[in-house]
Amino acid sequence: MNDEALIAPVDAVLHGGRIIEAIKKSGVATVVTVPDRTTASGLLRPIASDPTLRHVRVCKEDEAIAIGAALSFCDQRALVLIQYTGLLDSINAVRGVAVEYGMPICMMVGLLGKEPGVAPTKSKNYGLRIVEPVLDAMEVDHCLIETDDDIARIVPAIDNAYARSRPVVMLIGRSPVAP
Amino acid sequence: MMKRDECLEVLARQVPRDQIVVAAYTAAFDWIAIRPSPFNYISSGAMGLTAPHALGFAIGLPDRRIILLDGDGSLLMNLGCLVTIAEAAPKNLIHFVCENGTYEANGAHPIPAQGKVDFAGMAESAGYAACHRYADLAAFEAGIGSVLQEDGPVFVDLKLEPGEKYPRDYGVMHGPKIRAEFAAALKAQRAGSAG
Image (cartoon, rainbow over all chains, first blue to last red; front, side, top):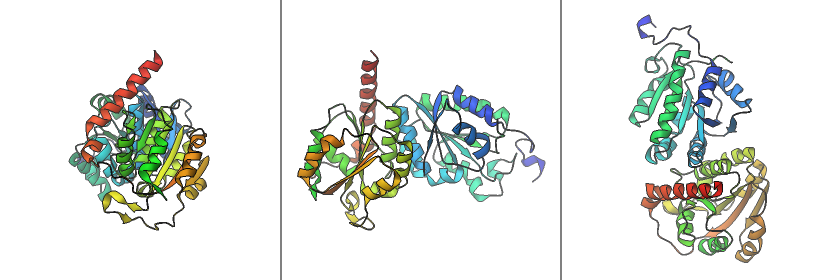
C-alpha cells in the first residue's frame, strides 16, 4: 500500500472513551450489540460495564435494528453496535425497517480486518470494499470513524438520523483503544 | 386445534383498547379486524422481526404490558430472539405464537418440522419465566385471564387453524399511516400520563 492510498496515518489513534462520550452526548441511552473483534475491547467492554448506559445483548444483528426502531417510538435513542458482516447479514432489516419505514436506526459498525489508515473501498478485503457501495446503493448515510478527529462526526450523525428519521451507519475503521 | 379468529376474539375480550399489541402478518390482519385500535403495531418490516420489535417496546415502556402475537414461521426465522428475550427478561412481555404450522401468507406451505417443533419447550429452555400451550378454546378461555397477569417473559403457544379470513392489506401493514397513528396514540397517552 503506498502513501497516496492512505486516508489517515497508519499509527493514528482512536480512543473508545471519547467515542462513548460522544454516544452519551448524542442522547443515546441504550446500546444493542453483537460482539465484533474490532470494537470488543476498546468500545463494547466499557459500554457493557457502564452503569449509565442500558446494554442489550442480541443473538443476531437484525434483532438490534428492530429494537432500535421500537425504542424510537418510545422517544428513546439507541445505538446498534455490530460488525460489518452482521450489517451485510441484516440488509433486509435495514431495507424494510430503517429505509422503507424511515426509522432513525443508528449503527456503529466495526470494519474487522481493515488496514489502518486505508479507505474501506481500497481494502484488500472484498467484504470491506463492498460495504460503502452497498450502503450507497441502499441510500443509507454513512461516515468513517478512523481517528480521534473523526469522533466529532458522531453527534451530528445521530442528531441528523433522529431529526430526519432515517438510518445512519458510522463505520469504525480501526480498533478503538480502551479508555 | 383452535380457530384463529375465535382464539383472538377470546384474547380481545381480555385486553383494554389501549393495550399495546405487536402482531405478525396473518395474525396481525385478523387481530386488527377483531380488535381495531391505534395501539396495534403491525409493521415489523421483515419476517422474523416482530418479536424483537416487541422486546424494544417492552424495554422502552416498562410500565406498559406488551402483548406479542408472533407467527411460527416468523419465530423460526429468528429463533435466537427467544434467548435474547429471556436474557433481557422483560416482566411486561407476553409472547404468543400463533402456531398454524404453515407459511400461511406465502401459499400455506408447511414450516420445517411441522407439528413436531415444541415452541413452548424451546422458550422454556431459553429461560422464559413461564410457558403455556393451548389447543382447546375452552381451556384457553379459562386460563388466559391469569396468564395475562403473570410476570414475563411469558410464552404462550396457540395451536391454531385458519378461521374467518379477514382482509389482507399489505399496503396498510407497510404504509406510513398505521405507524403514524400508533406513534400519535402513544405520544398522546404518555402526555396524558405525565399530565
